[in-house]
Image (cartoon, rainbow, N blue to C red; front, side, top):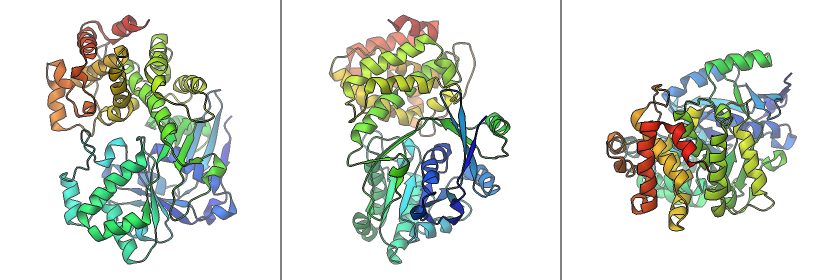
Length: 478
C-alpha cells in the first residue's frame, strides 16, 4: 500500500521562483525538492510560480487549476514499493498564451529572485554546427522587433528583465534545469545573444545583475498517458487530473552562483559545488548516452517499454559494453563516486518495472540529443582509434528509424522530431546512406573521415534493412 505524504505548510508560502516549462520532469524533480523544503519556517519565500508559454499547454494548465495547482507524485521504488507525495509547492500558474503580460509582470516582480527553465535541449535556439544563437529565426525576429508583445521564451524574459530594471526590482538568477552540458553557459549564451540584439542598455544591466549557474539534473520521469492517470488514481486512491510518476533515484547538482539568494535546497539532498562539469559529464556520457544508445535499436526491435527492453540480455550487454568500453575512458569520476556502482545502478534504474518508461520518450528529439550525448565522446573515440561498432550501429539504427518508420515486425510508427530542419529532412529521405551523416546532429564530428566508421555504418545500414535490427545486434554482441 502506498502512503501519501502531504506538505500541510505550503499554504503559507510566498512565491520566490518563476519556472518556465511546467512539464512532468519539473514536477517530479524541482517541485519535489522544493515541496520538501517548504516545511522549514525560514524557507517560506521560495514557492514556485509556473509559467507555460505554448498553446499545447492548455490541458495541463486547466487540469492543475481545477485542483488548486496541487497534484500527486508517485515515486516508484526499484523494490516494488511506491511512495506518493501530494505536491503543493506550485503556488501560481500563468499561461502566457492567455495572459502574456502577467508573465512579464511576474519576472519584473522584486519578490521573484530566480527564474528556472525546462525548455528542452532544442529550446535554446543555438545552431548545432556553430553554437551561435539563430537570430534569423522568424519568431526571434518578431520578438526583437516587438519587445512589448513577446512570443518566445527569450522575448518574455527580456521584456520581464527590462521592466525589472525600470522598476528597480533588483538582481536575479536564471537557472537551467535541462539536460545540456554546461547548461548555465548555454543559457547565458542564448539569452544574452537575444538581449544584445534587442537592447544594448538592458544587456549591460543583465551582465551586472543576472547570474546563470550551471546545473546537473537526474530523475527518470516518463510521460503520463491516459492509462497511467487511471492506473495511478486507482492505485493511490486519488482523483488527480495531472498525476506524475518517476523513479526513486534523484540527483541535482548546482553551481552555487545565486546573486539574489536561493533556497536552502541542500537540506533536502541537493548538492552545491563550484564546478558541476565532472558531474554533468558523468551523467550525460553514461545515463543520457546509454538511453540514446538503447532507444532506436530497441524501438526497431519492437520494444515499447524500457523495462521490457531491459529483459533482453543482448540489449543489456550492448549497453553495458558501451558504458564500460566506449564511455568510461572519457568519464572522470566525481569525488566520492564509485563509477562501477553508478553504472550498475543505471542498469537497475532502466529495468525498473514500476516506472516502465516509454522507449518513444527516449527516441523523442534525437536531433537535439545526439550533439549533446553522443557526438562529444564519439569524436574522442575516432581520434583515439577506438572500436566504433556500437556508435556506428546506433547511427545506422537512427537513420532507419527516421527514414523507413517501420520496425522489425512491420509496424509503422510516427517519429517526433520538433527541431529537424528542411535540410535535415532532405538528407533523411535520401537513398544514399552517406547523406544522412551530413545531418545537423552530427556537425560536431567528421564521420565520413573515419574509414572504420564508414565501413561499419554502411554495413549496418544494409544489414538492418535486409535482416532486421535484432539480427544485427546479435552479430555485434561479443
